[in-house]
Amino acid sequence: MSLDNIQLSPFLLQSLYTKTLVELDPLEAIPQEAVKQTIPFLGKNDKKILLVVDEKDTAFLADNDLNLLLSILSACKLSMADIALVNFNKNQDALYNKLIEEFSPTFVILFGITPKLLSFPLNFPNYQLQQYNHQTYLCAPALKILAVEKEEKKELWNSLQKHFFKS
Image (cartoon, rainbow, N blue to C red; front, side):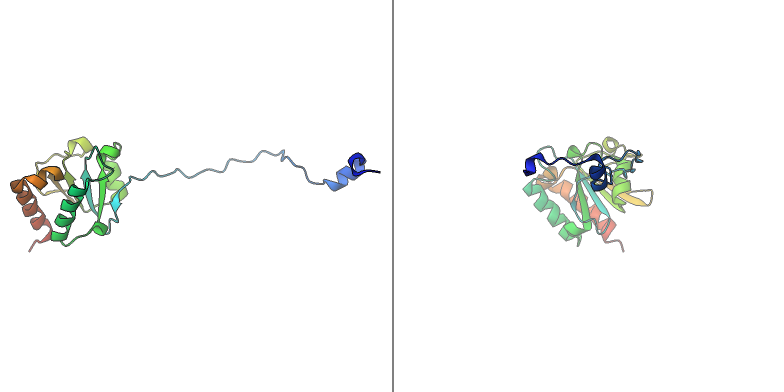
């Protein structure tokens, strides 16, 4: 008797395989939690300061612009850990409500982007500290412009001083 020709009786097969291989009772679908899409950002957002830029050619900022931003942050006694940097150009759905919901900022700075483009409920000129919804907003030209225009950089610095170094 070879092992290739073993024949088992139906009774023996039934006793060997007491459990079924296929579950016949339908199972309820396990509800999956909605996957929350998060907006990619640079920084840790420790101090709830949101910076929004509109950079087409880079993920966040070009090296020169990042260096300028770091020097601005340093002058305000801040670091990248204190902020969240979002590139609107790479996140077109990062509009006002979603930004506020996800980052809960106390201070928002828009570099080279208008409030209207982000569906902000208000509009305000560059360098004006605008209070709204228990938050402060500030618009400024793009960092590329600030790097070459000293007067623009001076205007930004005056606004930042009013906000961070109030007496």
